[in-house]
Image 1 (cartoon, rainbow, N blue to C red):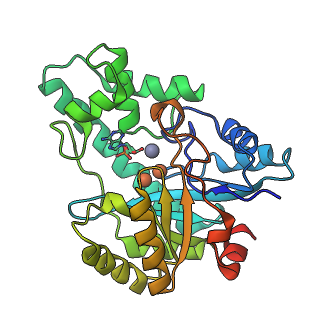
Image 2 (image 1 turned 30 degrees about the horizontal axis):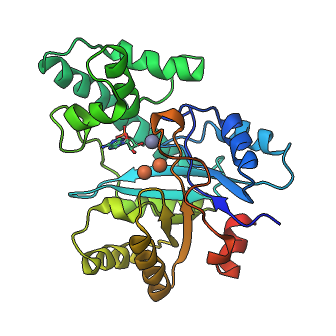
Length: 287
Ligand code: AMP
Ligand code: ZN
Ligand code: FE
Ligand code: FE
């Protein structure tokens, strides 16, 4: 009986470097009981992942999405898990998110150019196209980072963020305009559960502030917290597990795998034990 899950992964359909099919293959190789594909702003990889998962009877596939909402001073991402990608309201929202992304990309490239760097939007789109084997689709900061590496402006993706692309970097342009309540509601309409992703990235200065944010999201219908995440310390994970219990929320966890775009993050790490999920929550998530 498999005992661990990874409910947060990205593929080439958004800004990962591994195809949806390969994400499933890696999840099975890691002997996971379940894996969720949660690409940013799109469900375009779910059909391929679902079909690939049929070859692995011991692996449960959870269709998902990650949506970015506006949040002053930090990052607020909501995961939709167990969604039906046929939902019209979910698709409408995802399309709006892709439009804000498309509006932001040329502005960030212009800022890079104004900083004296030789780079075009076509260079950035080429990174995404190479990874996908086709043109079109969403483009994000990890593609810009790789384009800066290819052009020889920086040595690593991490250096690209450190010097230019991070939220407080000189080339950053904010794209978030989605109200978290709208994201949660669209996920519910699509039959999914809404989970606060990587709460550590909210950049709250203390636990009382985290609790205030979570309380407010609870009022919008939040179902769970991603207590386990590759960027959480053990102490933070314990704090989020306690907070989830205190608020009557479910817990999930995942790696936030992006393939070689985030080389330190491995599928199935951190270990997320099914035992951490209480029964009704497990049934809701894993069907
Ligand atoms: P975007 O959705 O286009 O704003 O890009 C977000 C992606 O950039 C996510 O996968 C983040 O994990 C990644 N990212 C954000 N900040 C950093 C950073 N400082 N170093 C590496 N990746 C980052
Ligand atoms: Zn990403
Ligand atoms: Fe995220
Ligand atoms: Fe993510």
